[in-house]
Image (cartoon, rainbow, N blue to C red; front, side, top):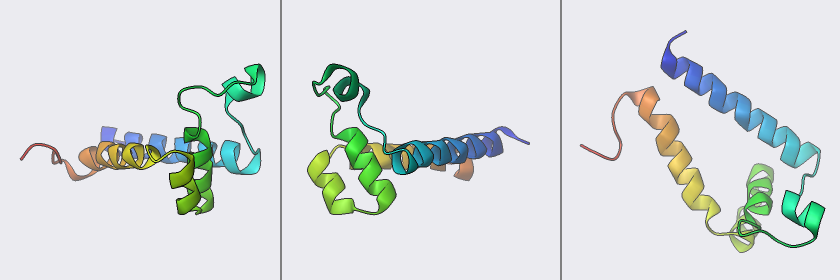
Length: 89
């Protein structure tokens, strides 16, 4: 198993774990849950949960920054798969 395949397996496993935590367990922000106050990233957890459920407009309302992180994650995953740096040509 080469490095890029290991990375893909790791990313897919992490995505599966996140899907399980957010979608099946109905997970909340830890700061909100334990302290009752929203953290600086609040809305990101809700946005991620909404994206996993396919509710894209609600994800935008919760925190529009989630789409930046999705794009950054796609670049991070695409680089080892294609072998080309998507930022520099």
